[in-house]
Image 1 (cartoon, rainbow, N blue to C red):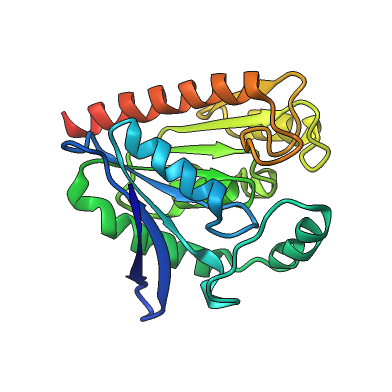
Image 2 (cartoon, rainbow, N blue to C red):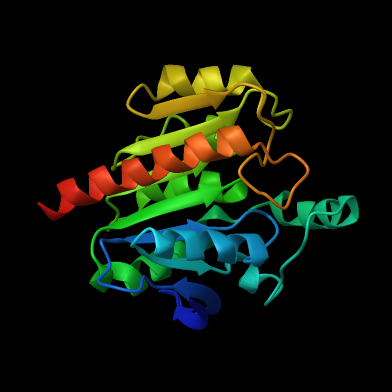
Length: 227
């Protein structure tokens, strides 16, 4: 269903990306933002699922500026190695590359953004700073609490796991207090990475509910943007 493509950011940087398109006419489009593990098998499968739901999807390889073509699995060693990418994240560069993905999708209808882990934070930052989006969906973005004084320009949905040691509930409360304009959901019994069925922290019940909420959110906001 999908294919590898090349995007060009505003500063001339060329980056890889994965694109998946629906079988028929797209209802809209979604930029899918990776975890710290690159545009790996899981992120490509998310794009394929988005396409199966009727949307064009593009996942830009945000780490191509650092290590082109990087992708990783979820073993303890791989997780430890991938943490280097968030020691000093360059969100300005991430946003330039995300903007290139938005541009790639403009012809496919209203563009939403959906991000996971690091990508959840990038999705929030994009909602606050970039043009061309109709909505945002942020899964367990660990830096959102530090950015919560920023106001999203588009409707923003957030998902957090109640057991997430990386994002304590006190951080979620900070986000709730500072961003009452966002729709925030906490999933009991769910840990960090609960959406990913390739991780030990996968929680099928939470993942299913969050996915349906996300697709409904994207559909409603895309419909409003198109009207």
